[in-house]
Figure 1 (spheres, rainbow, N blue to C red):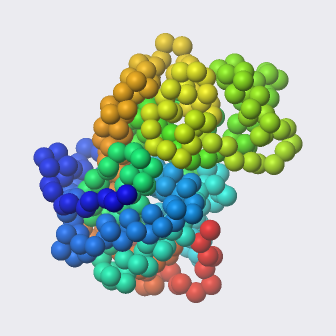
Figure 2 (figure 1 turned 60 degrees about the vertical axis):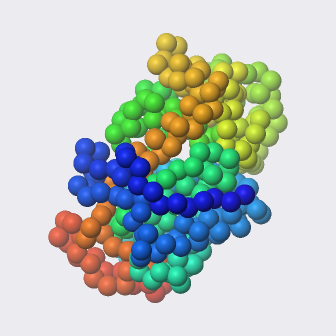
Length: 351
């Protein structure tokens, strides 16, 4: 399987960021590296494709990593920063700790890109390109992200704990979480469709299986046969096993996620809420996507690009990190006017 990288600026693809929450006034451009690093797309593709051959979960993990970055102070690669004397890593946040994957893959991409184009491509753009490739490798839509993001000088553990939607959120909480990022209901249903592939942990569904909302009973929106299957994998007091997010085509990006919701086979409460909340405006969207994969793919490409514009740093803001896990080894003046200094010695290694 090959992926063609053609830099063509289509009307509407060069996105003006003004009006999105926390956005820069500058523009991102899908042809940003056309002259400075024309091989960057191929480099990212080759690294991710190689890893995916031995780890089919990785494309889903890289998509999730981009999502978890963008929801915390914008798409600025803050999630990649390790603990240092002045930075408390977002990797320790409840939604991320022992959960996010692919940090080593991002580091491998960065190394390969630095060898080809030193000090040119940001880690934030590498995350976007890795998500772009991951969608394609999974059989999903081809995303064409506008590029030109720069990397943050800070991380925010507090926001990581506050902003990232949880697997046990109800629909009201989900809508509020997405609205805070400038994303609407269609974006919520569409981006949730990324759960069409990948894995989840038993820890996040034990309540649904045995004691939903303190009732001592399972979640009534779970199909009873599916419930018994999940209980076998996730017994009370058992190990924190992995489960397929999509029980039908777990490694393929397709519309089956929505078909599963219609038969009460959404793994997380936050998934099933999209279809099982009485009278919800999300139901019609689920119905549409479950019967029209092209509509889902088109909407996913639009919503992903929209999400990828949240809070980006451009121009002279932020920096181009030499290593994705650490800010550059120098004193830097951040937007607030304060100074931060980082040393690469004695730092915590990447997960």
